[in-house]
Length: 185
Image 1 (cartoon, rainbow, N blue to C red):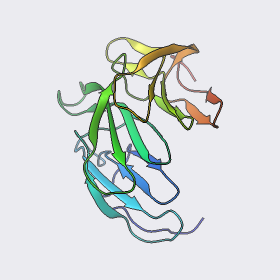
Image 2 (image 1 turned 90 degrees about the vertical axis):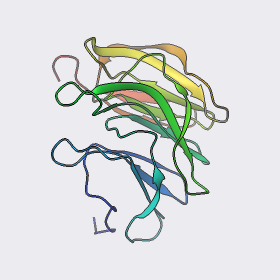
Image 3 (image 1 turned 45 degrees about the vertical axis):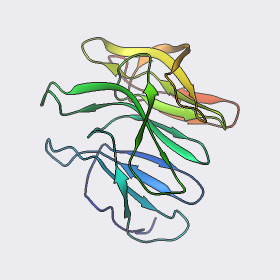
Image 4 (image 1 turned 30 degrees about the vertical axis):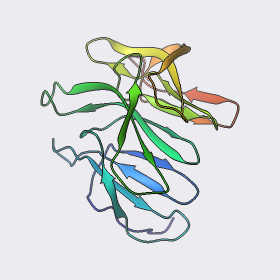
């Protein structure tokens, strides 16, 4: 690995979504309890510092990220509305259009509130899997949106285990979830 550059704001627990020409880093928080709504971007093919892209709908961390070649999404998340340790959990799906900088736009809502969930995508669908539901523990819910048109998520099915903080990856035809926290590792 080599140093690529710096974000506009140092942060942890944010989200990342990417096209062939832009990688967008969104939100996160500092080492304490200060959350950010910052959106930064870089060209993934050439090293350099991040540039301001716009602002997210709200300050957040731990959302599911997915995208198409034209749009990037963050679904669900937690934010500081109630203050530590009782953060606000969101069901909002926000999106950006990679080709033009600007603020995140509301796309619709997930079927449940969740944070520490994961995202997968094909060329047409964006999928959110699992996560943690405030007061409800880990979730096995999978829901999806059609990324080309705004709207609320639809139930896709269930994961084999209710979990959060799991890994995920996808191809054009298949999505995989692995590992995570179910009450134990």
